[in-house]
Length: 187
Image (cartoon, rainbow, N blue to C red):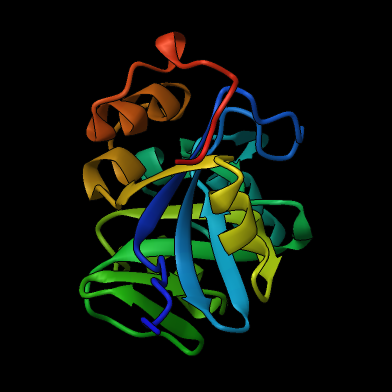
């Protein structure tokens, strides 16, 4: 028996046939995946608020205009009131999970304070909520061809416009989503 293939640091690209409104046309970075389940952050759906709005709500001030106007992302349907900062660099904050070398997920306020002070990670994405799967659930969805997977690409996560990320992620696999059939089979 072979060990299960865990998907941390992989992008899940929703197949065109995905009907779940929480995940249709999404790209999700899997941050943690083990025998107990998986946690990911949707990286291509923005909320109608900016990071500046969130910082002001938290009493943080920043003079970084780019950071102030950066969008907040809808990270997934689980705990949408909770913030998750996906960021680069090697620095750990009070509550940081290492996704891959140089790629972290932090849930503590101190990362936002560091960003506001100009002392934070160079690239960061703030998401509200996360995507979660119970034990075996993501594996079953993969068997049902709900997702394409590809190793995470930092430029896609941080630099490409959010609305272009779904098709750009599929191109990383060599797939034109417009040409995919909604039907899938197993050999």
